[in-house]
Length: 333
Picture: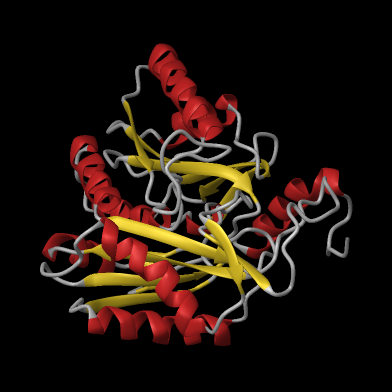
């Protein structure tokens, strides 16, 4: 195992020290492994928190800042944060208007966020609403979920719901926006290699050089099937066609097309993939009005990519375009 770490046991803590040193507009609670905006919560603003296992950077800590999250809880690598972390974050970001929990559909995340919300209500009376993302069309159930996994839509939801919160909307209104994003987004990914969790010291799964895993999860969970390695045009079709079969993306106000790198894929290959995705969408009568290309929800050093499509309306497009300033996403400021 070759990694730029000190020890597997300290990798998350050491990374949080680096985040604190690199980003003066963030504040890190090292004891509880929580990343906050440096500024205090704005009175009357809905607080947004998310979190999950580390190893998916920039998700979630890289999306803390203006226009997105108020806090992110960092679990150990590919391990859910514990309820105490989520409880502490909920209490800190509560500014009197309630708190939205953005939760990917993994059993540990869902259960621990539920427990944190119950504890917060009992201890402080803060109102908490959770929205669970479940956009992965690859499989219905997996090793870590009941139902579909939460993947790329999580990034888009945190941006759009974050913009709604910045406008001063109520908790109910922000949660409704978040649910619309989840309902109108679909994703699917492919792996070319496994990743290596530092604590394990070996690849999570064996994938021969001449094969790909279609529909892989962001923790290395198996997908729909393994196939021989193919040109990017064929792989793009393997990802886009099941998405289009699951939801009608024609009409409306177009889509956000998001081609995401899983950590080990260079940007040149992601743009090759984006070209093929855009070609398929154009042939299918789907209008792309916004795009996002890059490694935004990763799986350590896994080589591969995912495609996420989000069907837009006027309001969701306006919220997508609203200013954002975070380490991982920034425009309009």
